Image (cartoon, rainbow, N blue to C red):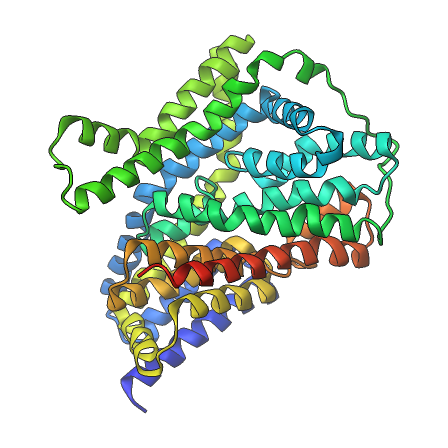
Length: 453
């Protein structure tokens, strides 16, 4: 058996080990990724202390970036949550679109709100609006819930600073500006197909009314009408700054401007995710916190609560960094790259299929994204892929990790509970919606890849 074949077998076995640890033995994904990484290193014959150094380097290299971005994003999302900003956005977007286009308004609301707010939190905040609309119109709850969920699911998977795409971009060394820009182009049409279009179809086949015990209370919204544009500005601000910086990087790279120009370097600094998210968080703390009457101590408490769930994501992402580093240092990554070159396998297709397989088997989109990114990272280094193509590979992984949410995914049970669906109805609605997002987004990604090299 050749060394390349042996290393490929080790890599496949590490994925199987990861799945057994997470699914069968119910070991936390962080520990499971750590053990899978150690397995690859030891099986590849790495010296013990070299293995330790490689694990440490992999963890440190990714956490130096991801911890700050995810932490700031979590605090920004919490401020939007406690201030009533999500409800305010929903109220005014629905009002602007009009009753006849409410489903499109809900899709756009979900798309915007889920940029800084975790999907499950955003859905819980906004689902009372869905209840109220269903009660008022007499239509099935799914008429309004599916478009909202589709918008949220798309940005949750494709648009930084949500943790999944940020983690994948960092592991693959893809510029966030490219991921954001292409993610919006890919995500919006996918959200339309999975949201208003599919929602109209499925709501005629599954008729479910709002639960009697919940009513939409508009007091918080009515008290903050003047804040709509401020809230929208706060959400869009970091994305705008990051995109400006990426555009300047391209211009500097083409030699049309000097990277030493003061204004160029200033905007590159302001558009770095660290600076962009810090600015947005401080603006949110003032306008959504202090101006709302919250004291400094309360803002501190909000930050503490926001960072608790973020800590889990940061650790899992760090473990993904370890897995990537071990694949590189053990030579397994080079073996994978050689396989791609020998059989002319398209990285986009492989990235998507890896994420699909891991997602369907073990359920967690985050684990699927991070594990797939860890396997693709050394391949990208060997193949010398451009920044735009790296962004497409990031989005292909995100699309694959979105597919077929079913009973092993916590999101499945969240939707079932809040919409009062049976397991079969949740599979027919939520699971199909997620799959439409995955497949349609991947088709758009493949189409864009013909124009990017």
